[in-house]
Amino acid sequence: MAGLSSRSSQEESRRPQAPLSLGWLGFIGGLLKVVSALYLVFILGLFSSVKSVLASAERLALELESQGGFETGDAAALVAYITGGLRSIIAENALGIGAALFLWILGTILFSREWERIAGYWPSIARRAFSIFTWLSRLGALAAGVATGLVLSRLSGDMSSIAAGVRLSYIVATLYLLPLLPPVVYSLLSLKYPPPSSRAGVLLLLAGAVLYVYSMYSVIQAFRPISAVAGPLEEVLRGGLNQHSETELVNGFIEALRILMDRVRNTLVALALASAFYTLGFAVIGFRRRS
Image (cartoon, one colour):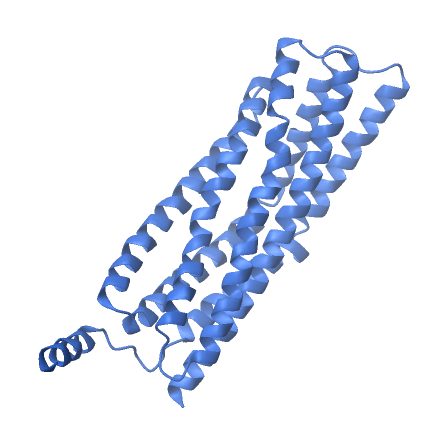
């Protein structure tokens, strides 16, 4: 028993001691993430601009149908019109998007630093797993960013490039799950090994983790409709669709993009709420620590 007690004491002494400012880096990081997500949704106007392009494309499709239906090349021209509009929106708002991404990444870095401090209360094996998991999630985020750039570059090419980009979109969605998973795991570990007198703060972190889980589900659901039209787009290239099928393809592509935009918007709102819960949780942890 004495040996066990000695080893336990040594384990406790090896744990890094959390500073008095525990919680406050996470609090600041959470605020930055909330501001970033809400700015993209409610201020920049990205989603309303995309919906305007989709509405315009829908009107053009209806005009073509009323004039006797689609002719050869009309479906490809409409898809190119939509993707061209998306490229223009991204180009026009590049500075705002970049600023929002910068705030989100900075907030994520502060989150990571805060979790490193909270991990000081975990057993050594959990801390080692935390370090490995953190680096894997960073690699996943980098891969998601590269894949996103690849898809966007495909939108500026011909119809075959657009079809390939649409097919890649589901892979991009899967890659974006990796950076969303760590906060869920860390929150569960904090529930198991909470900082002293911070149970209420940890419960708020767990509430944020639940919203992160919803966000992961929402990301997959957002990209599922758009990936489903990759096959029909390739059929257009091979001339394998008739006039009626091309009309259905264009309408399906517009509807898939509309669903994508709505669900991405909902995902960003969910991430903002999750970050708000984390912000409150870290603030409570910091307040209790100081008390």
